[in-house]
Amino acid sequence: MSLLAQLLSACATNQQAQIATVPQVDLPRFMGDWYVIAAIPTAIETESFNAIENYKLDDDGTIATTFTFNKGSLNGKLKTYQPRGFVIKDSGNARWGMQFIWPIKAEYLIAYLDEAYTQTIIARNARDYVWIMARSPAISDMDYNRLMLKVADLGYDIRKLRKVVHQEVMHQKAQHESDINNQ
Image 1 (tube, one colour):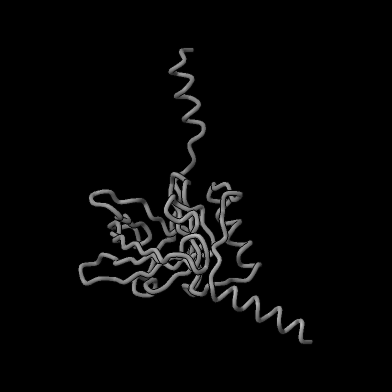
Image 2 (cartoon, helix red, strand yellow):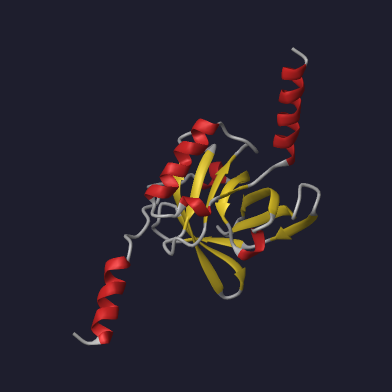
């Protein structure tokens, strides 16, 4: 067998199935703030703290997105990015193109969304980046572990997940420790 045939065969066996998205997303209900709980981050967010993604459905059907975080620490320099989301037709609103720079639209797949619209997983078929997000800056360990297992089931290496620390969570943790010490 030629070297080219061997390489093609190896590539074919390493390909993973396309990531399934949720069947339907109620876009108005999905809009608003989502706190990034953990991620396999892009290059711009490897040192993110207080990371929040905000979505606003515009009249033209596109999604105005504002992604903010503090770089390097809880009090680090505030970074703001404003990509635009484009819902892919006939996707149940679960597949988007996220445009940071014209004309490139990055794949954005809503791979998990709980019924209450309080927790979600955003994935990519390349399995290079993933985001676990919630409507609050903290979730229970049980919920985090459940979502982490869902990320693993999607074919990601969960050892690459980075938890994102939020100011409010740090305040709650300090308050909890203070309460325990005062008992």
